[in-house]
Length: 338
Image 1 (cartoon, rainbow, N blue to C red):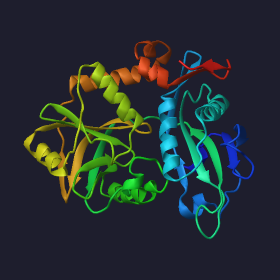
Image 2 (image 1 turned 180 degrees about the horizontal axis):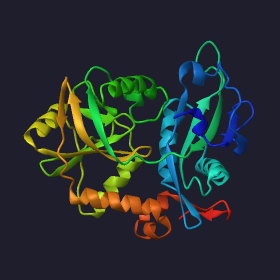
Image 3 (image 1 turned 120 degrees about the vertical axis):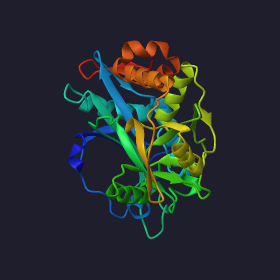
Image 4 (image 1 turned 60 degrees about the vertical axis):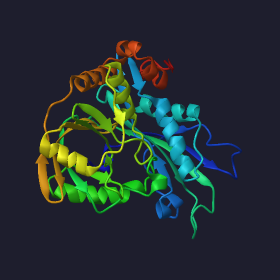
């Protein structure tokens, strides 16, 4: 994927303690481009955080899926790096500018990326307090397919302080190791903590069905994924309980060998919901059973229905409706939170 895939309309808001009493000012639409400040703390020291979001269009309206949940996670990420974060109204205003500037018949689904990054820079990090909040977008189809996973037993995904936030620094080593995994015929890496406990795959959360029990690693050492949360809510609607617990890699491998592990899938805003077909661990490769629980099938179908036909389908999903934003498509401005 090349950089030219970014769509042209970008919302930008610059903030400096010297020029503003509180937070970033209202965003404005710019054309993408311009030179980066090469001395910025974001460039030199990695002071940058971001979100990945989905926007869907249907019946003359658009859905910013779970906008409030994404904003709350952005707030936590900014706090981790001591960056000022825009309030929800500013956050949403910037997204609306980008969506209404880029959404058309040829791009009915957008991947939207809000960013906050430090723009002041010197010899030492964070000596100045200037930041930029920006929102960019691109047409980016959800994968929703099969993937192969390599277990990484030598490297840690990130440091504990950054395990639950989306700081750009997390993605440098992860991207390099994922690239190495791809050379081995795998799509992504399954990360472990220092004690062999499963955390997540690169950019995705993980779920297992072991002895008929759906389980996923608990929060604390993983990114609290918005799609993860949504699937857990939809599974609960099916009467299914998902246990959040410690899962050791030995339990996973032994389960694959014995047949106790009957299904393995991942969730991600960018990549969708994907079945894991093969697991590569310590030089051995294992094929994973495809016994998808009926509750997972139903939850996936509901998730797809909500995002494709949200004006009607969200009527029965009050939590998702309340955490999302619905606006009028570009040919009918405005909108209201639903």
